[in-house]
Image (cartoon, rainbow, N blue to C red; front, top):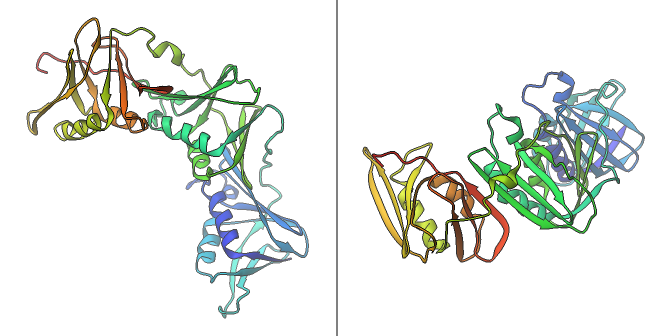
Amino acid sequence: MIIEIDKDHLLKSVIIADSVISSKPVNPLLANCCFNVTENNIEIIATDNEIAVKTYIDAISDSKKSFTCNGKRLSQILKEFPVGNVIIDINESNIIKINSKSGKIKGSYKLIGTSAEEFPEIISVSSKNMIEFDQVVLKEMIKKVIYAASTDSIKPVFNGIFFKTDGNKISTVASDSRRLSIVTKEIENNIKIDEGIIIPLKTIHEIYKLLNAGKCIFSVQDKQCCFKIGDTEIISRLIDGQFPNYKQVIPKDFKAECIVDNKLFMESLRRAMIFSKEPTYKIICKFTKNNLHIEAKTPELGEAEEYIDIELKGEEDITLGINAQYIMESVKEIDSLGLKISLTGQMSPVTFMSENDSSYIAVIMPIQIKNAD
């Protein structure tokens, strides 16, 4: 069988598919990409049995054939070829011969392929229970919460992003039990994910890399989620388990609130963090009627303190310890000039959001303040 295909298009598609392959696959066959060739296109599939990628590319072929080969080696060869079309010749023994059509390369390059008969069958995106997303919106929703997800495998339900619908709204939520972030947007579709689903972080990272512009399709079926982005489909198992009731974590009543200049606050945090230590990056924040006092002390490093003018509205002054790194990661996703900070007590959740937009909320648990602090 002879295939003619644009080198750069093939290289891009192979890299997309190969990115989900495990570095230590349990099944040797899953170290390869599967190629399903027809007269005018190629379907490239890769999987690690938890997540799969299907991507499609135009090609000219003289027949139909399915085979597998090592995607990393194929991409390494293609990277060194000149721009233009390549000619791929696969024989009955699945020996793959690759040459450039430009004629600039005088040589022969062969990869050892295998039969695709035992390669697992991968479902396609269903037209049922489907949401159509603007790619820019979905990418923003992921970006605003992914930092709060956990990479600790002890608690699998925190190792992903939680998606849930409520009427005409959809929320993405991430938490590592010490902090939580949530973004809520309106959707036109009538799809219901009332109980919510947890999509693994590895899947989320693959989706995020593909999102660009235009529409994408998202559906849920048989404990799997499917995303169709351009010519690529991502199919993934969902994380099994009950995501905590995040609505109970977000305080509804506050003892005090203030609006602080976002830029000044971030600059003060960066300076104070120099005098804090990993992994807690603890700073002390004292909220009083007229100012916010930020303080960091570490005996072997030194100390820092700054004051920012605020107008505190509420019943009382509040002093709390908090992880400055957590604040930095949360607040950088808020692009408004004014940052709204809401307080419920010294050891109760602190919320951060834009002063005029509640679609994104970050919640951080304080750190206990010892007497020495």
